[in-house]
Image (cartoon, rainbow, N blue to C red):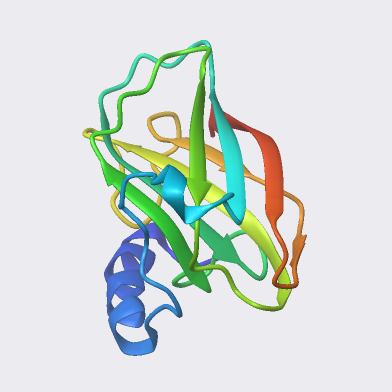
Length: 147
């Protein structure tokens, strides 16, 4: 296992060196764009009482994440989250054309992590591998919980 201090130092450097295949979306939804190609409902745990700094949704070829994501799909600063409710995300582009990936979502708290979620502080949600083949991906609900 990699010591946490090394991981926190190396992950940002690795992200700069390797980069991601897609930039995260922060654009508002536009109904004129047609149906979304990706949708997910992040179910915020009933116990959530944090102060969210950032929400990040990415794709990884394997879990647990080791290094930067294969694709960064969505990022939002200071999202308005409500305990026990769903946060819906719909995207209209930026998906891989092929491959199998896990959706990995993190709500980073102001007292939490930056590149690596802080246990007991940040919310994390993940899926089993999903097939991306150029068609619409409807992920459904993803439970966001403390780890």
